[in-house]
Length: 195
Ligand code: IMP
Ligand code: MG
Image (cartoon, rainbow, N blue to C red; front, top):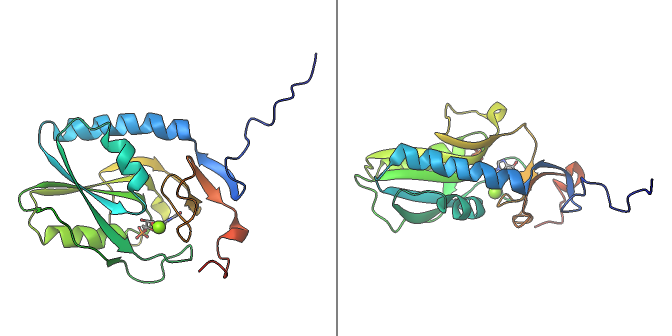
């Protein structure tokens, strides 16, 4: 039998990844189901989607195309991570919203729920605007890292406590455009030269 000339099946899509945690195909098929779940929950009610950028850009763009309920979209910018893999300060809201939220059904979308601090700060801010409801949707959930009492209403994947990048998730604003979600090599997680 001739030996195959093909490379190993598990070739990594980026050299800085230690391994792939969620493949592009797995993301695609999960998003279809998640879109259906959200559409079933809201039915014909209009959803005011607030995407937390930059992380939720890729996830929101793909997920929203699987939601059949009417949608209004706005974005909010929150900062906390800077150039390290653990939060350096309390999350800060850096932008203001353009849409009114009073009596609206708000769905907050973020890339990952980790300690829960980002989403709780944003939820508290949204509630001040008197929405009819506030729900949350995250692509990834690192359950073991939580330090506030918060669970998302819609979750793509529950993952272990590893620092991941790709499909919108970054380290120092890099790697967002990798099409899968992978674990960043540990020796690349705190390079001081990455300002
Ligand atoms: P939390 O406030 O600790 O829940 O963190 C949420 C935010 O931290 C997310 O919006 C991400 O920007 C960032 N984050 C948490 N874990 C990771 C990770 O593994 N990779 C990249 N960003 C992360
Ligand atoms: Mg980030």
